[in-house]
Length: 381
Image 1 (cartoon, rainbow, N blue to C red):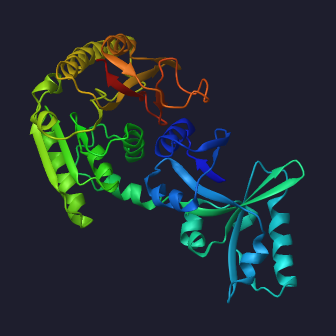
Image 2 (tube, helix red, strand yellow):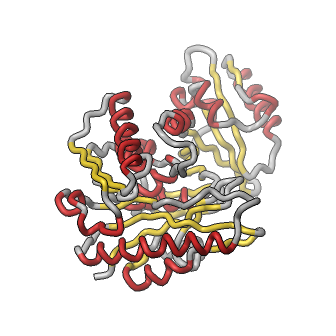
Image 3 (tube, rainbow, N blue to C red):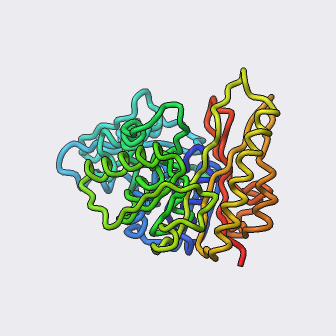
């Protein structure tokens, strides 16, 4: 069995994992963890670096820590964490050290103040490489021991975020969300018709996509994205096989030479979330005006995709808002989608009531009033 420790937005984490590994058997699911069976560890590790919303991955082990410790020639360095803890971690750490000492094993646990380990601690101490990071789960009187086989590279995200050529007043799609959207699209050759800073395509390149295509109405954004994409490829010694970018109003997507001439198998995108709002200036009237501006663009966008019989997946974000502790959804877009699109399920039927009533998923960040609603779509035939 393989256990995935899920990110804060656990529904997005789960959707991504099930998109990457659709044939696995679900053993257990909660807001903290997804446990799957009928899978090989090697397959997990081959794809793990593309699971951007997973914190850690563990495998269940039949033995205990002592067996691993006896195979180490020098001092055994390890860490232990607990989940759904019914026992004291301090007691576990001390008793484990005592057992190791009784078996003539020189050891040191790295848990500070007897607390569970963070990803940063595990990375810094290289515990995954040494195979010595463990997690304990207690189910009534039964104990399960899991070994960490992968942990997310938390440092690479900030580097990619802050190295972008951008106007700080421009909305930026978070890298983690881009990666999740690409994964659930199942696309290998991605096109972003509302490109902005090029984040979707940079994350696509990280997933070994060597062909990148984009367009935008704003020439400045076309150039920003070009600079970001080529800079990223150069810094990471990546040779792109094909690149094409054009200035285009996405309302007239049917005129896109990129879409018409290239073998695109997914559109992954987010259009402008409009102006940044604060508690002082947000209002129902301002939201309604933004909806009016956006709906005219989206109606033409989907109508013209239907005109050219676009048949692949579309993964897209629409905005929704919070005002006076209430959510205001972009309900006008729901009507457009019902006429022109088939909304694709993000989960197997066994996962009941995990999406919204509109079959979407929500992405929220603290201290923001404009958030994202994510859909997977196909144009109706």
